[in-house]
Image 1 (cartoon, helix red, strand yellow):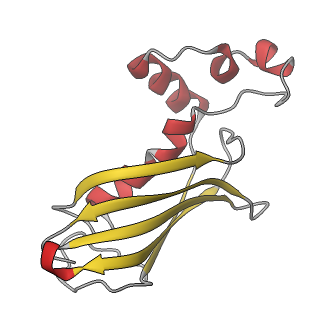
Image 2 (cartoon, helix red, strand yellow):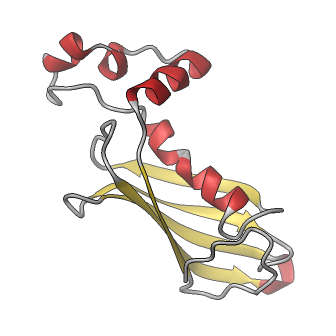
Length: 144
């Protein structure tokens, strides 16, 4: 299932899935570093990053995972969602100007509490490899 409306009142079910393709630019990485204060040269300095195991700058892990917040709050389940918790395992580095796909799959719903557990993943579209995996708990009184 890929819902494109934030105002839908259709109830979601276990195994419903949402996918979103996204990428970030170096300018967005720079702005994230400015906002968070994480100025690690691994994210910002090509010469420094060239000396590391990655050979080029990598994105902040939390910038990559921040796509989950966008999806939960505006797309799936959408408006009114309360983001309760999130686990994230950073499996592989993420790079700027690379297409990724966020995949959200509802694994459990508690209708009485309007609460769901959602498997969260980011997948590198060119390799099919998971870069971030985790699980979130969300509440949405209209969709769950």
